[in-house]
Image 1 (cartoon, one colour):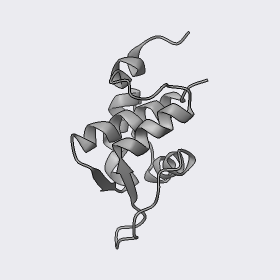
Image 2 (cartoon, one colour):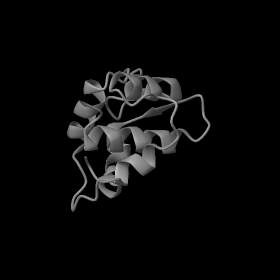
Image 3 (cartoon, one colour):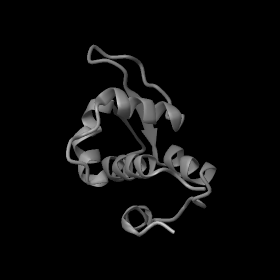
Length: 103
């Protein structure tokens, strides 16, 4: 089945944000503009929508901050998401998959 376009874009954006870090803590609002570009949407998704996608993918919450809910993202966690979705995991081709035509 694989991931939805939105989930694939979210994982792709999060992998870019990690860039070699063991883990990062992100707020859904920090991802909206990047997701707009990745999804080629006219308008960015709302932070509430991004948060819903993150919960659906079972990305763990980080300790709450003054700015609202945050999530802890690790490369292993993202690979697990792709493996659960049948993506095989371990493939560095996530960005290419995002732009390939659907079958």
